[in-house]
Image: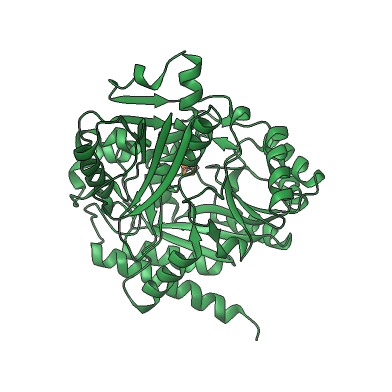
Length: 439
Ligand code: SF4
């Protein structure tokens, strides 16, 4: 069969990622002043990779003998030419209305089954045109699920929504990042000019911050790991094919099962690969041995969410966290191992005030991080927080849920104040970095 995989993006002067925020996507619009706009431009031109589940779905259909074409569209295209047996569209919140408008245009010229891929579409299904099949959850396992249930695509086209929970991670193919039609994947911040590829070894997160986080919504609260031996075999291929590549682990929490994570790090290090890595973890579940093994495996960057300097702000949205003193101590240990650090912070959280946001910005500057990422609290459809606070949502376009603008009525902070705080956070962090440099 011949399938089209459409990846539709709205026009934007900022980088759009459909892989972040559990596949809901983000738009890195980092401020409205000269500095914010300049950094946004740099990020847009330095970082790109598409949604991993979507790319994996292509591989899984292809290995089963189907012809798969990937197309990236910017803006709404009137026509989709060619004869297709099905069209798969990568769904996100950050480009939602553009994707739906494109689908409506496609529906005018074809009657082939259209699958809208992504958990977010399942939570906005009243906006999805009739007849479109939503694929949600870990939908990269969809072809395997069909196979197991002895079904063909034609058997399920009357479904409104199909939630794919899991499958055999070891059977997943290595993604071909040099696929025709796919723009070059890149991340100049973490990998410099090296070939850059994202990779997911463990899906799912059981932590309490599912109150506002979309990863457990999309991937589940149960952890689904790939065996370390299978992961290392894939890295050996990448290392041989693209020497000196940089791999970013896209696991929601790389260290979620510390025993397994240590085993993986040891195996990667022992394989003596010609690639290095970034991983995102939680400061609560790592120890000295883990940091040593990161070094052994050539992990060059570690990313972690800190979210807020204020404990009560973190607690109000059930953030799974550790005390500030412990954060600072662990970060210093990581830096001592010569591994670079990225801290992630969320401003304008429900219990925040301007003062607490300023305290978070100051705290980020003091932590001796190599990079900091600031965003604005976003109640995403489908999360418990959103369900309890629907009446506070003050935007009518889902594309505005981009994690860099305030989309809900905040008791203390206006939309403009939130954007100003965002710009200020980057300005202050950059100044703190420069004043620490010895010229
Ligand atoms: S630790 Fe919290 S914020 Fe991070 S992926 Fe898990 S639920 Fe989401």
